[in-house]
Image 1 (tube, rainbow, N blue to C red):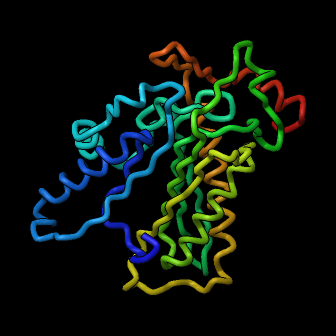
Image 2 (image 1 turned 90 degrees about the vertical axis):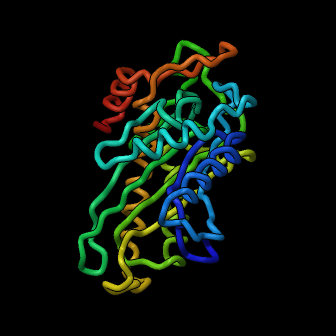
Length: 263
């Protein structure tokens, strides 16, 4: 993607050991469509986190059936959050992790643009909301969950007139946003982001680099909210070996935020 500056397929998210099956299924599906009847090269894009704490990861259960189902179900509108899809088996910040999303409207070079973020959270640290620490060790009566192989996958979409190099800068800011929710960027944490633009280059652009600061700020805000949403929307989940990741106790979070004057 860095080399070509192009996104050639939908972005799919899955479990670490299912990446290869998902990529193959995605490739097979696209090559069978009329648009790719003569295609001889195609780069599938599949993101992952290691959900081995809660899932039977060695089964590599995600494959063609699930890929086709996900592609067929893709539609505009509200995005499901929490313990859904690729977030079903993840844990984050001592709690149940999952999928989160958020968006912002922002002025970029005199034009109102949209930034959308979707995250798959599976990383360690101490949850923070509005700067208030919310450690799982204190808020949960049960043992906090610990991810097996930390990671966070972040997808950022925008309609701003930016090129591939500038999108790399956007992606960097997306990962910076993890610190705001308490990520510890542990040694085993593969935290990364993909950013893309749907702006038509024929309509002009890219914008000048010195016009990008509002886009960077909106990206970090959207990603931070998406990260928080991913854990607040997740429900307590028990894995096949009995390991449990508990939902954030929202009432206790409200109490902590109120005491800190953050709400």
